[in-house]
Image (tube, rainbow, N blue to C red; front, top):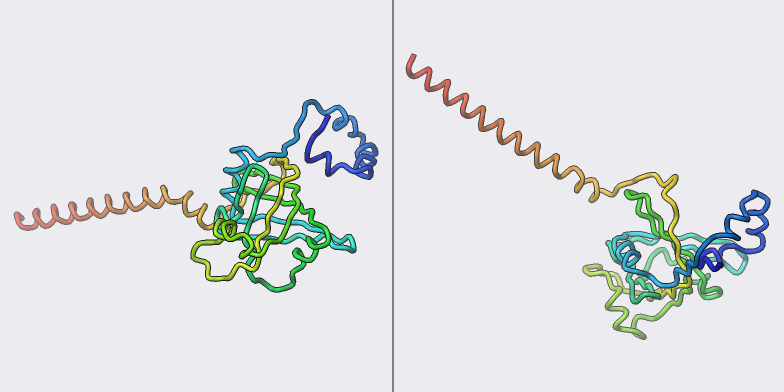
Length: 214
């Protein structure tokens, strides 16, 4: 049966490795159909909450290259159920990913949610588009408040996606996530400090009153 992501990932050499490890029957007899060729509301929410992802491309020499992409939450845009896009701004000007995609438009994306130990992996075909060629798309992917000029737009056509199990994903938290987590504690501490200040003031006032009547 078709498994979408694994239909691409499992090559003859991968099948040979599975057979050597004694697990080939697991995937040959896997029940059901999992095309996963369209994003659902679940993936849309997950993608919209991400502030970074990893993108792998392959050069003409066969060497892979993994690049980290980051920005504010939601900078990777869901254009439709089968399309993603993001703005590419000027960086270190090595253009390795851009060059690789010029020769081979295939890419693999890893989107990580470390606090919830979730990982979404995506196979896609990527094209680089000049922003003036598609101004509406340029407006969609532009990062508000960022002064940099968009050099190009990377538009990705979904081929397949899948979710990984949470095993071995170590929870990590951003400053904003930590601040949100400790906010109730800080509010409670502030309330206790205010209460203590009121009690101290009341005790001092009572002491003064007793001194007046001594």
